[in-house]
Image (cartoon, rainbow, N blue to C red; front, side, top):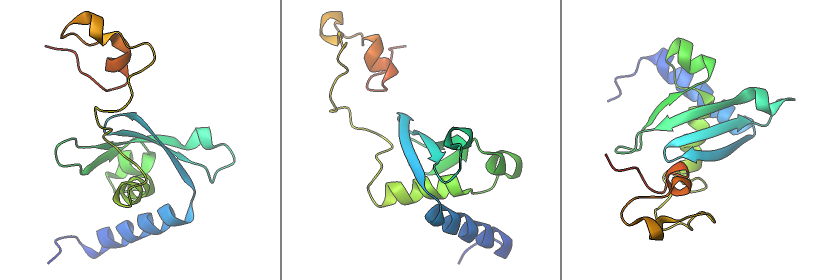
Length: 127
C-alpha cells in the first residue's frame, strides 16, 4: 500500500511524462553526481542541473533545479536520471576498472592516488 498522497502521485506522474517528452543529455560529473541538461530548450546551457544519487542505496536524493529546491518535489530531471539508470544507458557509479586518465601517476606514488584519478572519481584521498 502506497503512503503517498494523491497530489504527490500526480506530481510524480507529471515528472515522468515530462521526462519522456523532453530531450535530456547526461554527464557523470563524479560518482553519483549527474549533470542533466534539458536539450529541448533554445539555450540548453541555461537548463543544466545536478541530480545526486546516494552511493549506498542508489536512491535519487536531490536536484539543483528550482522545482526540487523550492518545493522539495520529485522533478523531471530526477525522473530522467531514474529512467536512464534503470534501462542501463547511464552508469552513475563507474567501476574502478575504467581506464586511467592519460596523466595518471599512481604507480609512482605507492598507496597515494594521483590528482587526475582523484579528480575523475576513480580513487579517494586517504584520511
